[in-house]
Length: 310
Image (cartoon, rainbow, N blue to C red; front, side, top):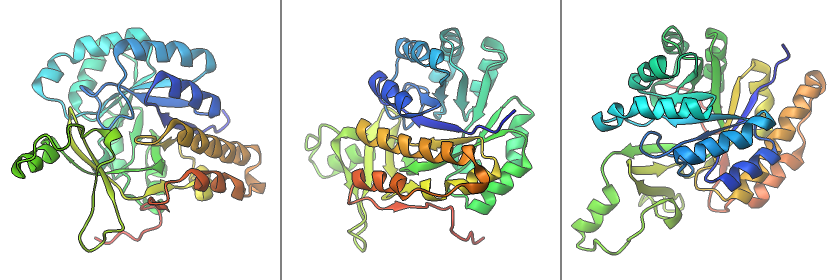
């Protein structure tokens, strides 16, 4: 079977999903906040079913996000939710909590399972541990460098997924920290909206040119990175290593921005696969992204080329 890496995207709405399919996305991670965390948008069970009906005829996969920190109430309702998603035809469950795995074994046997615990998914031994328990894919932490990513690919038989574009989460608390701060300041009504669309950010006193987007939702407070990963220029290194899935994180980005990003990565992947030995990077792919990039947010390689010190 010929090597064909997956270009994975997120979507905030059915409209965005359709437009990103047209731009070249192979798969999507979608879900609802009760079971998934840091989602680009809220998808009810009915919307997920609609997404599957749109995607399937085009050969596009839909993965349901169940990677939240599960409390007892959410865990108790997992069986019904997993059954509904399996009936809707989703292709895989993205999970971090073993409760999801156990529910899937009973109510969706044979369904693909993508283990994603972000901060702790840092080595292939852990990947293999979850593989023996049913996982089919391992989502690598964003803090790994290129050498560690390649080692993980070579050390496991599972599919390996890595983020190649977009912002990353650097802090999460189940508490509503912004609301608590405002109440402490005796200004509880100052910011009635603290969600992703509000444009809130925090910054350090010593580095006021760096702004970290912050928002609150049903899962608490999220602080995001001040820059955006952009690996389109060096994508061939991951393709040479045989990466299984390349994720574009579209959270807090416009549909227009995500369309351009997906299209650039699609063209880069297709160009490489057409002739790996004669592949050369086309500057237009990066320039298209730079033209729509927020000038206050730097494009970076993330941790891919940083030396890890222990």
